[in-house]
Amino acid sequence: PGPGLRVPPGLCTPDAARVLTPPAGTMVKYFLGHSVLRSSWDQVFAAFWQRYPNPYSKHVLTEDIVHREVTPDQKLLSRRLLTKTNRMPRWAERLFPANVAHSVYILEDSIVDPQNQTMTTFTWNINHARLMVVEERCVYCVNSDNSGWTEIRREAWVSSSLFGVSRAVQEFGLARFKSNVTKSMKGFEYILAKLQGEAPSKTLVETAKEAKEKAKETALAATEKAKDLASKAATKKQQQQQQFV
Image (cartoon, rainbow, N blue to C red; front, side):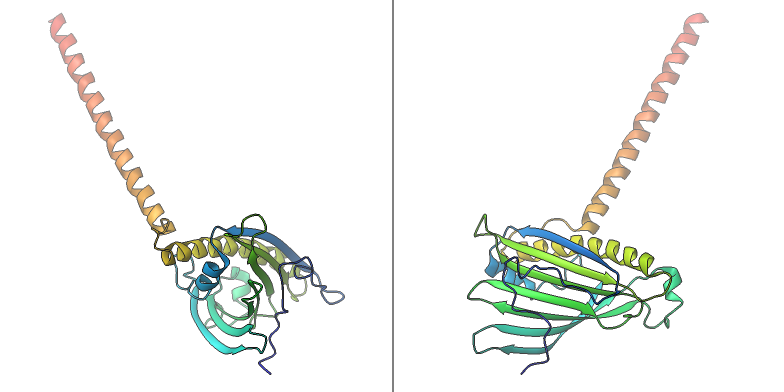
């Protein structure tokens, strides 16, 4: 019977990407996005289970499989528990004990249909729910324009029940979610390149380090050039003064 997984058997169809209707009276921020990974569905499926850790997911602290089963129709159902750092607005940190204010627990349900080459995931946070709830559904399927690529259709709903500040919390949550989506895609591409034996693209830390070193070299070169120009100017001035003596 399984643990009551929340993921519907989503195919890459308009029905699978339909908007969930929130409870009456609940205000939510909604996000819809489409991404393409230039790797086959099989490769993306393999990378999905190996994408942590990567240089872009340092906020993901732990991952544990809570339940896994194969259904009679050969679909893989999984539930995982993820622990992530959760940087809150400073005013929100006062509402929670210091030992939990910076951690969030995420449940991730997934269903994989290898026959139709689709994978649907549904994630939501199970703590800090009073402050904010972020629910996300992703459908991974073969790209309609290129069968060697994988399309990701992503939906998210951000809600808050904090009276008086719910709108501000939702705006904050949506902005952070978008930032995390960018990191997630970069991490996916990094793992895919690694699994395919390609040289992974430079990490953010490496890029920043190179930029810093280049800036130092540029500053040093500019300083040396300035010294050289000053020396030449002083020599020229000295020669001019000798001509008048």
